[in-house]
Image (tube, rainbow, N blue to C red; front, top):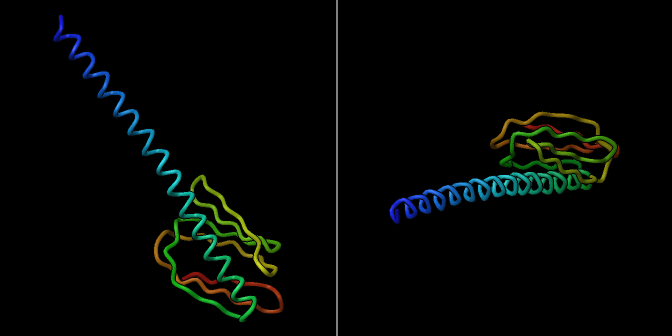
Length: 119
């Protein structure tokens, strides 16, 4: 009888550890995706603002699979279930889908409007 109790406790503890690990991983994955999107948005906004001042800015970035939208001076990045937005220093009107990976991002500013090129 003692062996059955020990075995039952061992199985229950193992199941709880597996469940806890799954919850921890899911929480970390959401946090990682949110951090990646926030960092990408911050960099893109800095590049757009640099283009407003200098007329052009370009950088090679590691970007997540996402959609970039800019309208009425608000740059928005959507990746999975995560969305982040921030104002840029000029009017803009573009939408582009990005496959995850390294991309060269170029912003050009003409007559107080910002355009985007991703290669």
